[in-house]
Image (cartoon, rainbow over all chains, first blue to last red; front, side, top):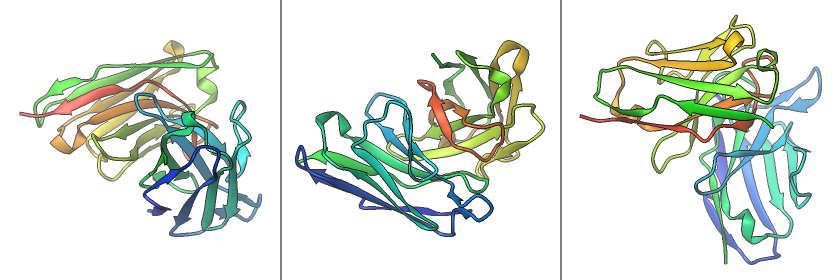
Length: 113
Length: 121
């Protein structure tokens, strides 16, 4: 199985400041034939189902604010929230879909400082 | 608007069975793979099982393989999860999720609200 490791486990950021979450996979998620990394990011707010933010490592879903930026390739990925808003308080998960079983990172809890 | 509505959760004794259902609307159901993802209390997300658009291919997490069976009825826009020999560690909120493509190896672009399964004596 592909293991996904996120860092940090939690972080507290002031409103309007940048939040950065890292995700590392145990093997490359880059498919050479299409040069795409099979990595998604989800936001999980309390009491709600998870919401897809980003697919293919950097493609933002329709309706997702542009303060959410996904980057990286291969084994190392980053989710950046450029200017933290109150509604961004949530747990964020990365997920690989390069192989079965699909696996998630352990989650990163983002709070307001 | 895509909607996924789960049902069938509840309290069950260890070793017993339960069948989860998910009714989908707002998209062409048989164009996409479908999956179950769960979250145990205080834990992270875990993919449980997935099925391709035509039921030709299914996949399971090692933790449930041999005990759980995923199926779908495209005529009724429905997804199912038959869970046998349930264990306390199967206690979780089970989400029905829509795959973004037809294959089992994809990500999840819509999620239901979840149905809670509690396995306890």
